[in-house]
Length: 233
Image (cartoon, rainbow, N blue to C red; front, side, top):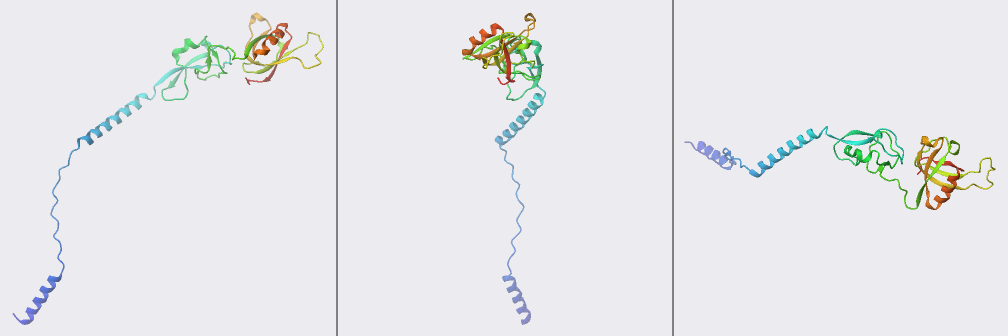
C-alpha cells in the first residue's frame, strides 16, 4: 500500500469517528391487555337504564289528563253556583300554579257554594273562587231593600257595585231643602222573584252602625239607589 493511500484511509477513518451516530430505531411496541373496570361498566349500564326509563315516562305521560270543574257561563259574585253553571274539562297533567277543583267534587260545589267573585265563562273553578257562606265580615251588616223600577237605575245592578241608598220624600211631597239622608253600601246580590211583582230585592252590605237606620227607612219604601262605581266592591 502506498503512503498516499494510507493517508487517505486514515483521513476517512477520522471523519467517520467525528460524525454523530444515528440512534437505533425503536423496536415494535408490545401489545398491552385492556384492563376491565367493573365499576365503570356498571355505571354505564345504569345510565343506559335510566335513559330508557326517562324516555318511557315522557312517552307515556304525554297526552295524560285529569278532569276539573269550570264555569260554562258568567256568574256574578254572591250568586249560588248550580250544576247547570258548571262543566267538566280535561287538563293536562304536570306542574302548575293553578289549583283547580277536581271533577269528583262536583256535588260539593253545585247548589252548595256561592261565587266569591265574578266568574267568566270558561274560567276554571278554584277553592278560592267559591265560598260556602256569604256572611258579612266583622263590623258589616247586610240589609235587604225592596225597590220598584222607579227607585233604581235602569242599569243592571251586580254584586260588587258601590252604591248609595238615599232617602226620598213622600209621594207628591216637596224635595228636601238640605241634602237627603244617604248611606254608602255595596251590592251583595239582586233577586227579581216573580212573587214580588215589579219589585226587586237588593241585598246591600253596610257598616253595622248604619244598618238599623237603613232598615227602618227601607221599610217605608221611601228610598232609592244611586250607583257610584260599578264593581268597585
